[in-house]
Length: 240
Ligand SMILES: CCCCCCCCCCCC(=O)SCCNC(=O)CCNC(=O)[C@H](O)C(C)(C)COP(=O)(O)OP(=O)(O)OC[C@H]1O[C@@H](n2cnc3c(N)ncnc32)[C@H](O)[C@@H]1OP(=O)(O)O
Image: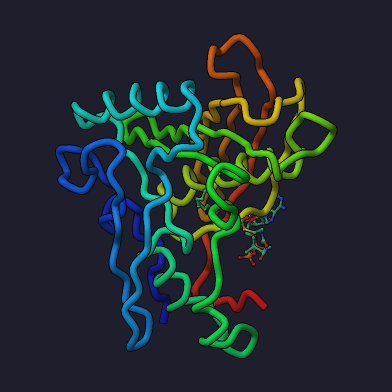
């Protein structure tokens, strides 16, 4: 029997905005309670400003929060373990305890949320349902260095994958990246703030085509352009 795992993110209650009641005032911690087996664990939402955020990042964040007020944009929560419902969906349909045991699963962390404050991927994501666009505000920290003083290409690719992936995830439920193409056009200085834009271009069956770019906060520099193909997972197929 085909089990549907393609519930759009919005119907899973993971999107939040001031009107929706889930986005609390700026700069307040937004803890979430998740139960894992019989254990209750408190998770912190990492998409809120912290002291490592530069003025530019705070300014952009505030601008996007303002856009959330009329409901056109939603801020997306970021936990060390990813979107809670998505985790459960993936686990239900695709996690194989043969490869990763339950006790190990309790210790995992979402890659982009695994650095200490300010040293890694400081970011916040916003989504516009009408335009099918996801925007990520990203400040890459000191531990993401590639060439001296600049961000590592892999770190840039990670955030592009995450942002384009979020667009695909919202459109198609549980997806994985099948293909990601990036043209790196200008390097990104460490600790600077960039805006990653992404939108769903086309959906063909289980294939979700997404494109995007990375721009400086003042929109004067185009750092990268990217396209991605994300595949909606088939619950009748094993991943391994
Ligand atoms: C900040 C925190 C936020 C958190 C936000 C998090 C967002 C998530 C972003 C991170 C996601 C990742 O990095 S995921 C990690 C990296 N990705 C992976 O490890 C995936 C490894 N690959 C796979 O497991 C598999 O190839 C799949 C699941 C992608 C597809 O396998 P499948 O389900 O068997 O599908 P399959 O039948 O092969 O293909 C379905 C259709 O897609 C086409 N297709 C498949 N692959 C390709 C391809 N590379 N290029 C072109 N076309 C392709 C096929 O031709 C077919 O077309 P047609 O015949 O139907 O026309």
